[in-house]
Structure formats: structure tokens, C-alpha cells
Amino acid sequence: MDSFSSNYLRWMSPTIGDTFPDLQGETQHTDAFSLYEYLGNKSWGIVFMHPGDFTPVCTTELGAAQSLKAEFYARSAKICGFSCDDASRHRAWVADIEAATGQRLDFPLFCDPDREHAIELGVFDPQLKDDAGLPQTVRSVFILNPDKTIALTMTYPSCVGRNFDEILRVLDALQRASNFGVNTPANWQPGDKTIVPHNMNDEQAEEKFGKNGFITADLPSERGKVTEKHYLRYTDDPILTDTKSKQSSKLTARIGKIKSWRPPKSFLPVAGALSLSSMRRRRGTSGGKSKLAPVSPAEEDLDVEQNECKIDDDLNLKQNVSDCSQRHKPWTRILTVGFSALKSEIDDAKQQDNVKSGTDEYQSAKHRDDPYKAQTRRFSRNSAGSEVVW
Image (cartoon, rainbow, N blue to C red):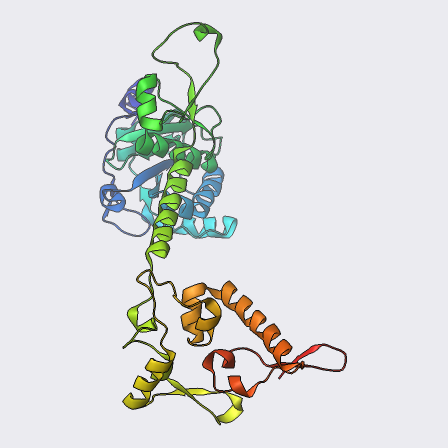
């Protein structure tokens, strides 16, 4: 290890655009780990290095990473730790991490006791050495694209703990760039406006984001000039735009289904379909409730002839509303005129009956056998004039 100079170790470090090597070896869970197999073909990867086990800053970092695992998973990203110790020490350290942070690690913590992979990655701090005099790794973070190329790197000294909220933020920004082709400004947070890429002229920007899909900054260097490309243009966060577009499409589809819906033929009061006689009310059941009972074909034909109310092709009744209300089942009326209209008709019918009968009691023998009137609530008025449902 001493033969490697600090310059050589730095030169070996992979950078943005390079393919990250497949870490193969042990973790606290298995002795046959493969980073590529763990990530699969669709996941982003977050690999973060630690100087060694049983170190204070690393203990807090791993607890923080575990607490945010669900957030990474929601972004189709998997996390993997890396420390220069063996599996037995990793397992003992995991117990300490749980005691200190309340988080039980269930993501892999790669083992590199011989520094073989650390040398390949060039992640050493030549001035920081362990008890055996070997250089320790710095706090490097590698964010990997699904194709295993490096999308972003961060390097912290051993004395500074990483900000895992910042790692989530830059992952969000990288995915905006990868999936939607936008850039993100300084201090950007999800939901803030993004930036139109510099290599895209205004015409291309209009094709991609729409004619009014971006805002051009008013800059002194561009005032009074005709230019094909303004270099600072803002557009909405594409995730929010995409979400609104999907919600709008779903709403439009639902409205289309509602507008095109027609009741099935079995619910329409036409000849041969549902009529008042297809089911008849049977009185005298327990609890004062009526039940429906089938009738004979002869009774069916008689009731169809007496009660049938023909419907136009567009499902509008030829008869007026009051006439139909005397002839159709309540649920047929609901399908035809809707709940609000049906309620208004019921209220009007109550008032008309009260006027005709000259009494406040709403129970007339002429309506006793009528299925429509049987659905309305009967009421009378007490001496104080209040309605009493009975």
C-alpha cells in the first residue's frame, strides 16, 4: 500500500461518465454479493464509502441512510454502503448503529478489508490512516445511472458527515435531467422552476415545452437584440406538469365514460323490458316493509298494456313528468330525471295531495298500491304543526 503515491490514488478515481465497477464480494448478509445484480437493469444506484467500522460519524450516516431508504426506493434507487472491514465486524457494527440511531440496516454494506476495491476506486485520504498505518477511505458518494455509468460524485473529508437530504435533492435533479431534459438552478428544490438547456434554441424550446411553456429572463446583454436563443429561460418542474397532464387525461376519460353511459335495456320501461308488473309489491311482511314478488305472464301483459310509458330513441319521455311519475318504478325515474328532480317531484306531489284532500294527513287510498308513492315517506302534523314521520 505504501508504494501507491497520493497522486496515483487520485488519478485512479473514476469520474462522471465512467462505468462504475461491479463490486463483488462479501456484505453483512452474504459472501456472494454483486452490485450489478443487486441494482438490476432499471434502478439508480447510490454507493457511499466509509473510512471504517465503529467510527462515530459513519455510525450516524448509516442510520440516516436507512431512515431515508423508502425515499430512495420511491425514486427507483437502491443504496449500498462500503467500508474497509470484514463481514463479522460489519454485523457487530450494525447492532451498534441500531442502538445509536434506532435504525436496523437492511441494505448491503460491502466489505473491503484488503482495500482492493478502494484502490480501484481511488477513494483514499493519504493523510488519514488507521491503526495499522493503512490509508482510510474518504466519504465519497457515487450516484449511478441505470446503465451503471457515474452520474454524480461527491467527496467529503472524514471529519464532515454527509447531508443525505442533499443526496436526495441531487438525485431528483438528475432524474429531471435524464427523464425530461431540463436543468436545475442554484438551490433548486422539487417543485421549483427548472431551466431550459443552454444547447436548445428558442424554436426547439417551443417545440419541447410549448409556445408559452417557458419564461425568458430580461437580461441587459440581450435587450434590443434579435437572437435565436435566449440563454436563461425558466420552465415549470416537469414532474408537476406531467402529473397535472395525467390527472387531466384521467378526468377527461372519466367524463367521456359518464357522458356516453346509457342504462342497460333491462332497466328501461319499454315493451318486453322492465315494467311495473315484472315485480309486484307484497304487503303484510314483518316490520312494515314491502317485498317484491314475481307475477304471472298474464298479469305481466295486463300491466304492460296499462302502465307502459314509451320512450323515444334518445331516452326522453313523451309523456310529461307528472304522468310518468305515476307509472314508473322509482329507480327508473331516477335514471331518467336524476335524484334532484325526483325529490322535487315528490315534494310537489305532497303539496298537491294536501290541497286536494283538504287535510294535513298524507295517506290516500288511491296511492296505497302505487309503487312510486310507496317510496315516499308518509307524514302527519302534530298540534304544534311539526312533521312527524310514521
